[in-house]
Length: 256
Image (cartoon, rainbow, N blue to C red; front, side):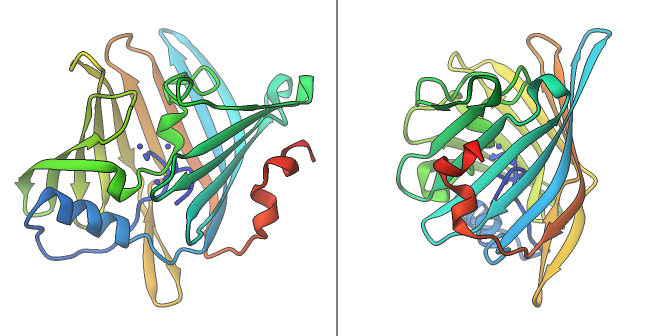
């Protein structure tokens, strides 16, 4: 939920969330809107990502580049693997709409093939990680219902988020830091209502665009509590306020 772009398309949702300290919310929807509004105006962003897949004593390291573009109708993101060599050039393009159905395409360089991620495929693992394709889409405010706002302490609130349309999850429980107006933790529940996985956000940094500060997590740990597998994404060389041509986030450009 890996918020915006990957981490906040990543990043969930997971990939662009940001913000600043603010007064206490009255409802769960109020808080969700504060989080959403706090990210308006970031323009675009770019960075480098490292993904570590952990299963028992075995770990696999991958590297990617990420780009994100803020738009009036859609937030767009582009992830491209650079290492290891056998998957280098693999790209994921995501269009996250505020109202329409989101769209995603994955480009597989070995086959020179671009494949659309269908609604039935969004629950699939992204490149063998604990992140699904759905996790890499921006959680548009009006596509969800919100309930059960709870104050954990003066700087931490929690609420339940449920998709209005079909989703991989029955609900997510979102814990928000009021210092950053960004998630500290997101708990994902499967369709049976059982806890499936937990995303922990850490290493937040502030980035200034104009007169506004944007907060980005430097690290997300996604732990599958049912299998004990874990995927860790970390960012480096992140730049906010970047301008990109919209043509970079076009399906036809994936083969370039």
